[in-house]
Image 1 (cartoon, helix red, strand yellow):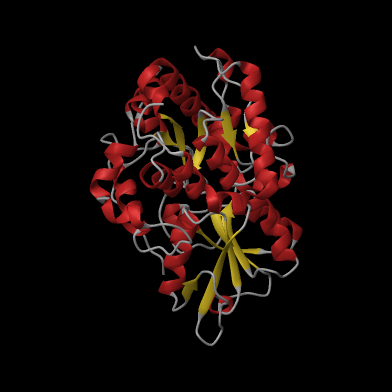
Image 2 (spheres, helix red, strand yellow; image 1 turned 90 degrees about the vertical axis):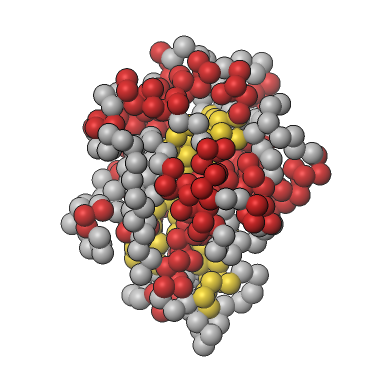
Length: 384
């Protein structure tokens, strides 16, 4: 294994929270992935994913024509089980939460490398139907998909900007204006909102869309209305894929970028590809998640925050702002590694954009995705 080694003790300690979140189902996913990997002799590149629209580029990519063998993507039920699978090298490629990738590499010493972004936006804060303003969340529980997630970062910024205080491992108090954050697998969030055990959740689609279609929840705010075109999930591979098989890493970038371009050109068609085969949610929810109306009320309409974006370039400015925000985010876990991180240095150590730059050139250049020619930007964040 290239890169920093991970001791057995370090792996178990780092994954303690993952096991708690993933549970028995997560371990079953890991076992199946391991068995299938053994069946291929390790020759095919293994893809792990969660059943969310964020994974669309990896799922609809035309891998058959790539100069490298890909195995059929394996579905995991929680971020915990997918992270464990990556740590134990049962998957070679995954769409992982950006903060999770930071924590895996710098907190656990995992040989993780980001090739590019899987998507932008694509998440929302969904509340129970009776909640009309954020103040009503005081004294209640709000579910997030993982401590190391953009969802946790942005929801905490939003709560604080509105006079509320997020807490963990403690009951929330209406009089104190506190909101208890709890980690929950995305697939459990809609039922939990329906039965009243939580007042809201923030997660990727199509769970927000599904809650609205079922009438058990209402989208209160798209996260892209708080942080413009933020990256939720990144395309993460094992470091030795980059070091020892650069042609394979390029093939991964090529098929993902091509898929992103194809999805952007025909979103309803992409929804049909995803439904049934890869995502268990009904087609109407998946289609809605990919094609939200631009007429929906949002604070920053020019940002088009309700529209999940599929562009691959990992802007360094985002990585820097993300790591800075992680310092101010409450998590139930070891955050000591953050004190050693310089936000301005993390991008170079975590991201290798050579492959996605080459893939972008083949796809028509930055302009084909509406990106600036110089591939730089200034982050726009408004948690109010």
